[in-house]
Image 1 (tube, rainbow, N blue to C red):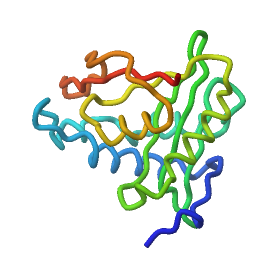
Image 2 (tube, rainbow, N blue to C red):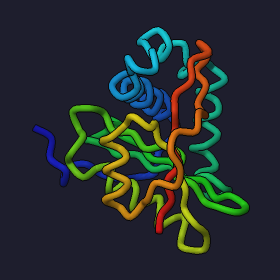
Image 3 (tube, rainbow, N blue to C red):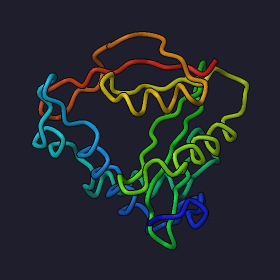
Length: 174
């Protein structure tokens, strides 16, 4: 059994990029399969998670972490990355870009701790916005618990490499 207290929320270091990608891929496969929108394992695996280009983008994000418009924190159980959250400062609004926790580590408060870390980095100067798959009830409820409200219903937004579209809704912190 995993203990929330043994999980540390820290800045990632070079070498964590592959583990971040693994969390991303496993989370997508666990979260985004959907019969209604005909999103299959093949659709999800068509996404470019771990090409050299993507890994280099993650390395760049780690190297410049917090100094520009992006901030990322990771949850580590010992040295294993088990979750991550990324925030981005924008001209008009700030955004929570992604938050993922490996399935066995969900419901331990890790996502809340990472979200708080990212929201503290963003500060309170601008509205904080995010997008979430319209059928991801767990995430929608998680964000509502943290003060986010649904702004709009299902604007098709995330197009997968397969051409299928994942319906997203916008949420904003109020």
